[in-house]
Image 1 (cartoon, rainbow, N blue to C red):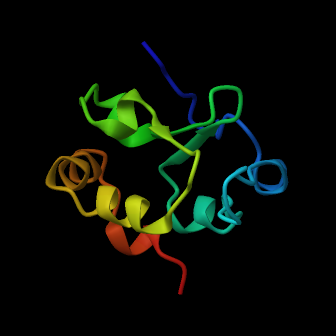
Image 2 (cartoon, helix red, strand yellow):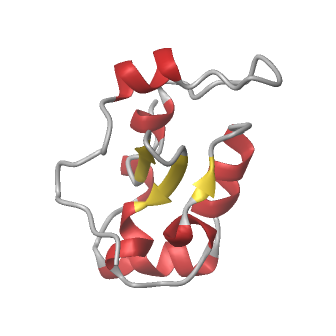
Length: 103
């Protein structure tokens, strides 16, 4: 099972943004995504995104199995964040949605 430590983002966001350009287009992982989506974890070796909240609660979804970062899109992150299972985990962990967004 894949697990995360409290302060672990697998790769630091500065190195992620500089190395995550996809071969097929200009899409690349944006450094600010890791601040806007504090649950987001990137595994550079496997080129996958994970949700540390859903993973810690042992849910089964694309972000616990690893979402491909081949063509990263912010809308996929937003969509995951708005799913009921993710929101429920946030409630269980007592994480307020307003804390997840940059103002």
